[in-house]
Image (cartoon, rainbow, N blue to C red; front, side, top):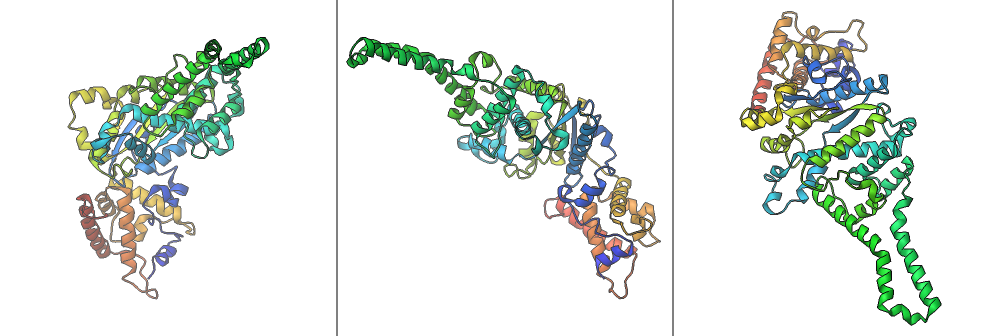
Length: 496
C-alpha cells in the first residue's frame, strides 16, 4: 500500500507532512502562512503601527523560522494597506559573510574558531544591520523594480528628500553599501546620479592647483627662458598651489584607513573610500558621524540618519528579524559561540531604540546561560521589558490544530475536508491524540512522526487490500520508536 493511496482516499492531494523546513515548505508558504499561528503570536508580533521588540527562545523545530516568515508576510501586507506608514524590514539571518570578514581581521590565537566570537561587539552588530539596511535602500533607489512592492522606493518620495538627506544617503552608502553586483565606487556614483546630488564644488582645490600651475608656467615662459622653471621659488609656488588638494587627499586617505580598520563586517579599500569621500564638500561632512572608532556612538548617529531618511520615504519604523543564529559555520551550533555572538545585542538602549523593533528568534540552547548572568547583565539588557518568551512551547492542542490545518489545506479533492482524527481508528479518541501530540513538543517533530506513521501504516497492507484507518497498535509502536530517536537527538546522539 502506498502513502499517496491512503491520502487519495481522503481527497488529500499531497503529503501534508513531507517537509520539515519552513523556508522550503510550500504547504506552509501557500496555505498556512496567514492562518496557522503559535498561541503567543500576538505578543511576539505586536502592533505593526508601533512595533516593539520581542525575544523568543525555542528549540530546533519549534517554528522560529516559520514565525519569521509569518511576521514578514504580515508586515508586507500592512505596508500595502498603509503606504505612508510602512515598516522597513531587515532580515538579519545570514551571518556567514559578516563573520568570515570579521575573523579575517583578527590575529594570532584570537582567530581560532572557539575564541573569535569573544571579540564580537555591539557595534559589529550595528555595522551588519546598517550594511543590510543601506544596501537594501541603495538598491531600491538605483532600481525600484528590484525591490518587493511593499518595500519599493517611490520616485515622488525621493523628490521630497532635502540635500542634507541626500548627503546622508550617500554618506551611509560610502561606508555600508555592499552590493556584490557592481564595484563600490560605480554603485556610489550611480546612486548619486539617481539622487541628483551635485558635487562640482569638490573640484575647487583641484582647479586651484591646475590654475596656479598653468599661470605660473605661463608667466615664467612669457617673462624669461624655460630654464627659469628649475628655480626653487617656482617649485615653491607650485607646491603652495597644490597644498590644499594634497592636504585634503591625505586627510581623506587617513579617514578611509580608519573606516577600513574599524568596520570589520566586510572589507573596504582605503583608496576607494578616499575617492568616494572626495566627492563631498569638506563643509558637508565635517563633524558627521563615521565608523572610525571602536564605539557605538557613531553608529547610533548613522542609525538616526537612516531613520530620518526612511521617514521621508514613507517608512515610519524599522523591524529587524534576527534568526538562524546557530547555522553559521563559525558558530556551528555551539551554545557557547551563540552566547558570545548574541550577548552584545542584549543592550536595552539598542533594543529599545525609538522607531526600531527587534524580533529575535533565538536557539533554546543558550537559555541556561541567560539564567546564570551577573546582576550587571540584567540591568543592561532589561529583558523584562523586551516581551521575553523563554520557551516557544507547543501544547498538544495547538499541534493538533497545526495538523488539522495542514491536512485540510492539502485536501483539495475532498467534499468535506477531513480532520486528523479521521485518519485514525474510531477507538482512538481526540483526547488521546492530543496527549500523544503533546509529547512531540514541536511542529518539526510532529511532521517527522506523522510521516513515519503513514509509512509504517502503509507498509503493513497491500494495495489490493488496503486499510484506511491507522490502528492503535501502529500508532503506539511508531510513537515508541520515534520518542526513542527523539531522546537520542536531545542528547546529541542522533538526527531526530
